[in-house]
Length: 232
Image 1 (cartoon, one colour):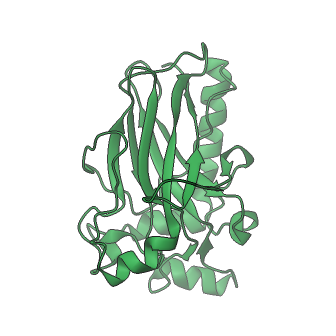
Image 2 (cartoon, rainbow, N blue to C red):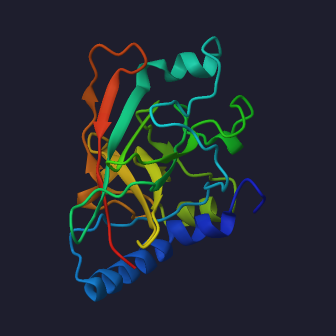
């Protein structure tokens, strides 16, 4: 079942809670060793990460689907602006030249490699923070979705009488020279599945509030989220 577009082994580890357990243990060990408790918590990578996402300028969009497509019309109510600052957990100083790698599923709950209607690398991008540690991009307010149920992971969920849903979330990998690379997710606080995420990845510190965005024809929602990195 695993292909270059789908990691079924990773998905099986996710729905059994193995990846979240390892993440929780590892992150606590590192935070205790560093003494930097203000660092942003990590979360699981997930099975749909792709390396080498496009490098884009700050303030640009990771939506590559044409505006006249059915996919874009479905996504339009979810258009969002996401921005924030990356800082040092020890000093609070901004970290310039940080690479912020971001990806998420579309409004139909599918990542681009699962969906023939989406262009290659749609809803994926890498951004570099400016001299003040800031990043910004246009994307979508995320949507909850069921993990694929047509393989071993889906059969395990059925046997355990568990639902397959992940709460609405955006994936990030945030990395800077001299700092530990952070793999994490942020979760829409209004999503009903934040209390029973099928891969057990939700943490209180990663819950976010999307607000209505006014005066921007390119976005209906806005989110400001800052990342704090611990030193190596």
